[in-house]
View (cartoon, one colour):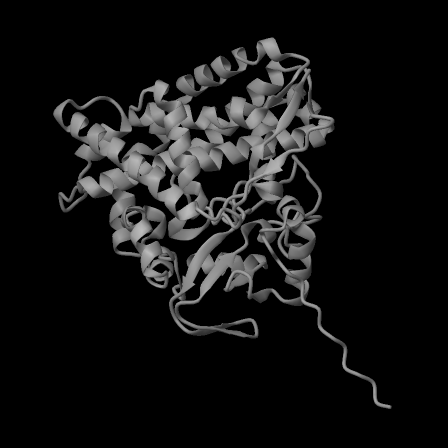
Length: 414
């Protein structure tokens, strides 16, 4: 009797699985080895897990960041009607544009994110961090949710200050952002996510429409006033819809990504108390430590792209219009790029992680996120003698395929 051929059992990446959402790295490792350009029937998309493939998806002309329009046009009429306003503004976001529109928008938006502009924010960030930690003083010895009490309000308050949004709007702003993330982040287990995302986007857009009109009448020293006055070399300015969309992007992107960076930093330092001790003794080491947080378990799970041109990647034929998830979290643990990639090493020297992207779509707010992360981590470690994950209250991960972070992170404050 002839031997039967082996049955191939491909690894499955299913972001709806809570266990996999918590720790996808073993599946990523199998995919890198066995099927690095993997078609996911669950997601109806390609999954890329090797460093070089993920990097290529960010820079090669065969891929486009304009993933919203193709997805939207394939939806049923009822869903398109629900999402029409949200998609209108998302299509004006810098992160979803190709040149030449991307080039024009980035030049105009850069006025608020130059190195001198970011350095000017440091005293405000320090003050905000200390104010939030003051609010935790009465909770010493208790368990608190570090997302709700620290990691989430900090970047929200910072970006609100930059845009000139009053701090008493925090609860409403956070609510709008949480609703939008259901669609933008790719939530897999929320049946009414389209309607909720629409409502959040509608309210955020309406708020910024009024604020922009107010700043046109009476400019202030905030980034929104700078963007209204910004002109490129052709004297071109941002339209009102572009100003609304860019304000939404800054509020959403500046809040969500940095929240996840800070929460992940707290989680990893709780799990690696030796690293926390090192940073308490040598705060100057925090910059390299934050880069390792972003590599090891950073705020970016994946980037979504659309195949623009038919081409072969590895052994697979990719066709125009197909979705691609370039798994940044997998690429950041590729042993072909990183030595001992599954070890958390805050002294790691060679660390070309892809968390902020690469090429022309490199995150415009990366320096702001690093500033907030540095001040948040060093001040937290200085003011709180010890941190430990709650004994009987497990952290809860976000339901998202694009972002990676925590919905809740219960921590006992020493």
